[in-house]
Picture (spheres, rainbow, N blue to C red):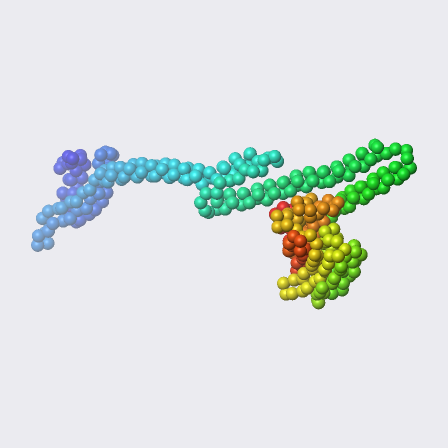
Length: 376
């Protein structure tokens, strides 16, 4: 590159430098864009203390500026490229991450009251996999609740339709004969009583869903067991036995527990004869209190035992052959669960059955087992 005009030998700047006696430094702004600014520094050359010459170091800034602009241009292009690639990767990554959420939304849109079978595919681990698992578990509970409700309505309709059909048929056929009228009215009243008991059972099961279902009090286990046994002996002519009475107290609803144990006793009378033994008893341990009803009747087959506490369930092998609506054991289960307990069953065909209420000693209404029951 040739010397710029400002540094030519005949330039004003060179003429000024030639007259210098002392070193100086400075900066000159030049309008020429190819030169830029001129930075200079002078050095006086001496011999024996006498100035003999001048050395000048000059630097043009145009090259540095060009290099800086080039660097900025390159950096800008690289930065834009990195940003674009980052956005692309982020978009692809977000689509992959949000795919389960999109699947959740798509599945939710396909769910309706007639089809609750749709589930999400759980892939891998992490929060989204947990979300899919939680959604599937929620749908399982929801489907179970809908199925239970549907079956309940169908079974209840069937149980109510039968006595209505019987009543209607006998009233239509009733003649003028006084004896015929009396027999028809007796049958009608019996069917109406059965419908009334059925409705009361349904109302009791519905109340079991409420927080005020129990009226808790401290119960003396010994006196309570003896009272219930005395009431049970009036249910039917059987060989009643009181095998054991618990020593201590528990917190519970006296009336509800009485109803549950008598329900088990009544159930035992329906599957025993006058020569069979029905035994009642209770026991207390650190884990809780147990009330049992044991009989030497027909027993329950293993195939029927898992569903014997379901509403309207009727065992295939003659169990629950009574005229009841199949709600008695469901009520017992609801009362036990409302106390935070369970019902246990041990049975063998031809030997007999033992139903046991297993309850905690101390019961607080706020920790009811059915409050968190998945089907409630």
